[in-house]
Amino acid sequence: MIEARNVYKTFKTPDRREVKALVDFSTQIKKGEVVVIIGPSGSGKSTFLRCLNRLEEIDSGEIMIDGVNIYDKKVNINEVREEIGMVFQLFNLFPHKTVVENVTLAQTVVRKRDKAEATEISRGLLHKVGILEKENVYPSQLSGGQQQRVAIARALAMRPKIMMFDEATSALDPEMIGEVLDVMKTLAREGMTMVVVTHEMGFAREVSDRVVFMDEGKIVEEGTAEHFFTNPIHDRTKLFLSQIL
Amino acid sequence: MTFSKRSLITLLILGIIIGSAYYFFATRGITYIWHWEKIPEMLFYHGAKSAEDAAPRLRMGILMIGFVLTLKISVFSILFAIIIGTIVGIARLSNEPVTKGLSLAYVELIRNTPLLVQIYIIYFFVGSLLRLSAFAAGTAALSIFAGAYVGEIVRAGIQSIHKGQMEASRSLGMSYAQAMRYIVLPQAFKRIIPPLAGQFISLIKDSSLVSVIALADLMFQGQQAVARTYHAFEIYFTVAFLYLVMTFTLSMATQYIERRLAISD
Image 1: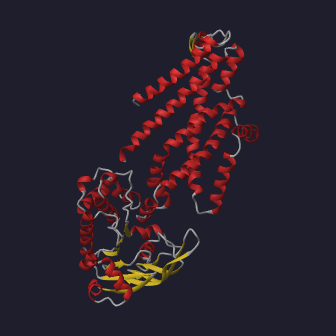
Image 2: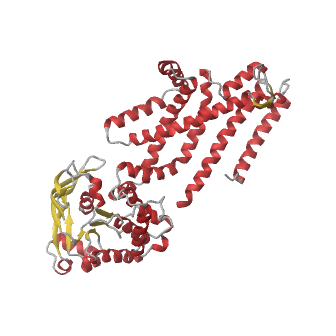
């Protein structure tokens, strides 16, 4: 379903240094697979996620989604993005829209659903993430955990084939992490294809099919969550795990 | 719009300042005989206008006619300035070098030359070529002038919106234009209301410069009335007050809009 082949991506820092974010990066993610990406900050894991829906341009290589090379100039990237939901670390809800409007807007604008149908779908999803009673309040009146659940509902409203989570729980107070992870676990059990950048090893152990450990733009080691808990091979992996566990 | 306590206090303070200045002048001044009784008929009068139009009815006096023209030219210029400014503000942030360069050139050219010169150029040069009326030329000059400033305000407003808003919109499949229209611009607009209000208040006052191309605006009519009656102080005080009516109303209106939009905070 997702295939990255020999992807290179460099950033230029403001002082004109080059930072290699992805170096000859290749991987495959199958339909229905839940992949957790871990790694130290600056290892390129968020960059990889952002390349999957072309929020970043790549230097070379290709990324295929459902057999379509999304960096091909002929591809309408907006159509690709409709199929890939993304959840951000800082939620990025639309502050001038109410909760239900946040979930409804893209459905009407992009999917061209009529307002009533879209609102119906939104309310169903808000119910699913357990926040329907807040449908008419503005995001600023919600806690971080509640905002993130709305953000998940907003992404699901497009009926995406893939969901990506970019450190979705990193900005949350500890007591709110659980409620967001629960929603993500439900999705995983329903068979959603998921790419999850996170440090939550409990989540990885419970629902992931594969864990990928990245460092300096490359995959250092990959395997099941169990593999990482019991016998990680590389020293770099061991060091990282000892720091986060 | 509720006429709030705060705006009443503001008016009161203004009144005290102007009143005491007037009292000081009127008592200490040399021998100036005030003729305030001449002012009301310059605003409204009842009677015949001319031999051809002799029907006795309520008519606008010279200053009120100027007031209406200034109001008209200001409203049109503000609308056009918003349109120009929005386009220029977005163009300034474009990745396209030509769009970016053109919009920057426009802003720098217009901001760095005097409005008075621009009014002359647009009226005498562009206006003659395109056969523009004085009203059209005056409105165009003011719109183009204010548009440059509004463009910079809009650009700053857009840049102040966290880039995550654009990314979230795009990741949902919205095009750049849709994300701008539904997500970024509404939030930016809310933030730029205070500087926009300042800009438009300036525009209303700057509109007095169009009197140089014989547009019979409030300033022009004031000058005419002074030339005819020599009641310079009364007339200019009245003209100032009429400008104040327009700018103060705009001020209050924007504060009202600001309060209305604050509900999602």
